[in-house]
Image 1: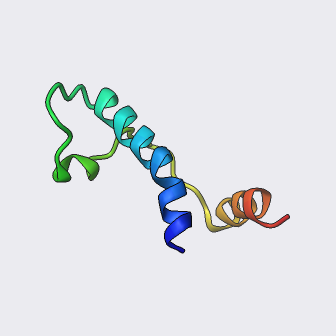
Image 2: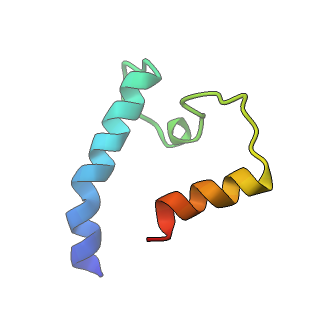
Length: 60
């Protein structure tokens, strides 16, 4: 398990770097900077749409 976590660290670091850019943060990314949403979505989904989206993406 430790190997898997260590193998995934470059992806996590890339995510934080992208997040920093999207939030226009010039200094270091702080712990509280990982929580604000990056995008705003005004669309709502019905239960049926949610089930269909889930089925397409996760049920192979």
